[in-house]
Image (cartoon, rainbow, N blue to C red; front, side, top):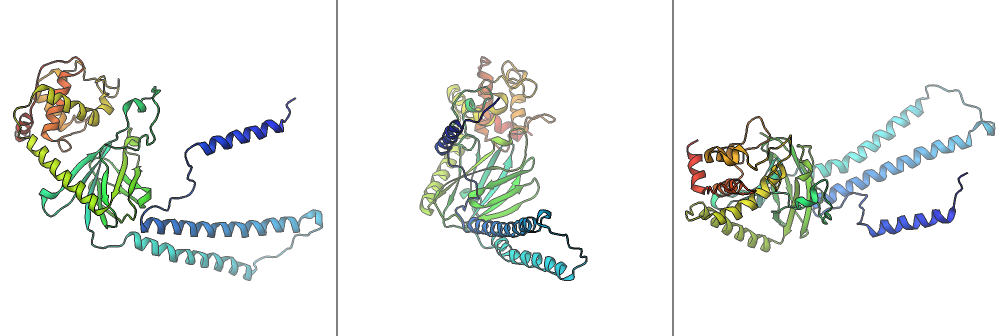
Length: 382
């Protein structure tokens, strides 16, 4: 016969409480966020929640009171009445009044969310499988900044059979965050290149679908410096969980310094496309880094691919075949397969580096060296 050991029960409760307090903070409620809109959404949530609690207390209070006060054991006899006009008026008018009262703050919050004003910074956000592309729009095209933001969690943490310890921001870290100035109105123009995505950052109270062929608009004005994380909130494919968002909010002065630095790097990158004295080691080093960012999720860092899903590049007909065919599949993709076209995502230099790397890594050792000029010539001939 099983017995109940009260002392063991208390010990168990104590151990559970200790482990709970030692773990990361659990947030059971919505976050107030760091924008005026996010705080308005939070306040609206708390108002509606309070109304629901009051309704629940009143309704269940009356119900339990009636059950206890008018139970059969106390000699209560059920009343026999029908079509009480006053009761029907009351239970119609009161809910109607409650809904009207809740609609007032809700309408005010929605008006704030969709408020149209002139923005100081405009960022175009494009969803790709499975990364985000950001472009800071400017009247002068030479002053525009654009880059891809890719998952940066080490692959050894992601593998199903991995024993590597997960980092603090597992699957929520990127190689290039979206940098925004604080106390500045920022407009987002959100769309997608392939399938439906959704750009969602809870602390900013921004969640918009990214739909191919449609541009959705949102805005934010961040009040506090810091790093704020989000994810794609639409099921966009097998790597949906590998599509994080990181927003780095900086002071206007720090944002301008970052902007100047990025413009300088972009100028240097443009100059690389004109460089002619590349050597194999330079292309291999750049190619490995670019491959690990854009290709390793499918073809694996080892180049062995995923059997039945993504082909291996080791001793593959692509990596060992004609160079022009190799460039073509990277630039244009492979129709009818999961291989996307990287022509719009990668510069000539990056395409050349990836092709060079794939043709010489993992024992392929073709000795082929592809330059940005080769890629540029291929594009020109299309």
